[in-house]
Length: 255
Image (cartoon, rainbow, N blue to C red; front, side, top):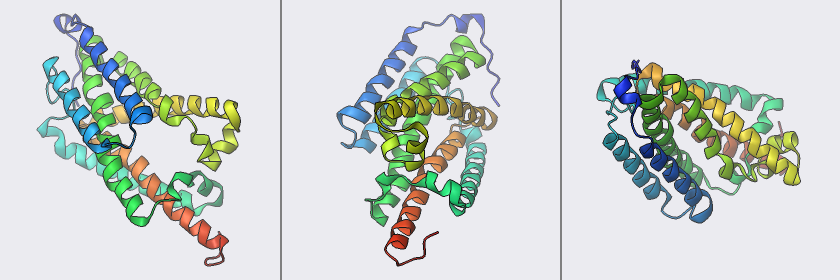
């Protein structure tokens, strides 16, 4: 675990590099969700990740500060692998229980083929969403905040930023997820509540991601948790929707 001490000469670092990173994240978020969400997404995400790392290095952060140090790679892989295993176990148990099974149904998965869901789970999620968000929030931004304001404020501010990052992608999600829709309701009110719930839940969940980042010393650990949550979530949703649809057509008894 890295000892995040903020010496006086470091805590007095200029704030403008942080402003640059935050403005860049705002621009990335708008492009991803409103301008060109499906246009060269993987190349865009990878390029932005490289630029963010370059900004972190130019700001004086080391590879270790950003969770990219070689000495912590094995630790990151082990922690990340453990997270993936535990999430798979939880999802499997949840999919067997009638009351929790409905929460897995994301209707966006209903139109995907088997190859489509595999591409999304094994390529788009890890190389797009997970890579970009973990480099942005648990690697570069977190390291830059910690060097200026210390560990506590780095945790608080990065959690807030991660929650706000999910405003745009959470709009309309209550229409695709029956379980979420039943909680927040329909129409504009349901949409507002869905956004608020997403911002709060992702902001709070960021604490877990950061804890993994600190304990393991590597950004690979939260990457494992992040992929397991999203990638396996899509896979389980696709399978359950297929089973539901087959049950409705009489090909398989409904559960």
